[in-house]
Length: 413
Image (cartoon, rainbow, N blue to C red; front, side):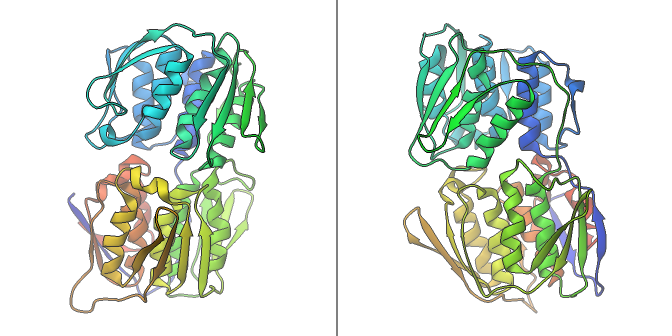
């Protein structure tokens, strides 16, 4: 379908949402399990997300070309996986994927002994992997301020290097919880690692992965959109229970609990997930999204809708995601009265403006081939009729999103 039209209902909601599994945990578990030699059945509750299904497909194929479509983690993790396995592969993806930089990871892999050539533009896919010959280099440095996925990709192969690896992270480390998630999952599969965060050094001795069953947690990134639903509901008794979330999660986006506590949503752990209910919101919020950049779109929409003045830092990486998410937000927030302004280049943004509900014209939101744009703006349907263009983009991370939305909103294709 090319668009979906969402309508508010004149009644409150108390629903249970069976969240999808985390694609971040799933994609790491799939790579680590494969490095351990485990069967696919060893990992349970895998994500329905297209990124994860693409990973499953490519790990089971032996073709010369690995087309990751638009899956960033799949591109980065499989590039490292195929490299350490010495496989000859052409790595490619959608036109947008071939615009997303990968040079930092390729340089690191080359430093370890991978033979990789770019087939088009230097530093970007597509590229040809030609095998691996260990370079005898146990010490490696890698930038931490572009994508934590580069670091995670290197960490997962590190135990298989003949001498292990001492990895030094230079510059600031973005999305640190995702690196910690990688190390925690590696530990689950028997790997010992020592991280000195003050020195920004991670030491991993040479060792073997052990096959160990792993169950994937529900997705906190997906949970964020349901927090928005509760925050924007006009009914004080609105509530949602989100199933499958852990009280002590490995996922950086579990920070949504703390952010939304400032924006009008209380989280209560139920033993099988979290119950969301309304509470008083504060008039302003400042948040550093360095460790949870995927939450920024959700928070910007809620802040505009609730007239909360928002100061954002740590969102530089949004410019090299599925789309330039900063630019996309600036364009779409204007349609509801939001004004997102860069006040310090690449460092600090301010969002202000009161919600404008159009009585004569139904707001229509573009999604820019970005699943998170579609899901971040969908909760506005609680306040007025809206249109979301190309809603099928949610298949990248949350294919059942619109069927779950039907529990709360009326819709028409």
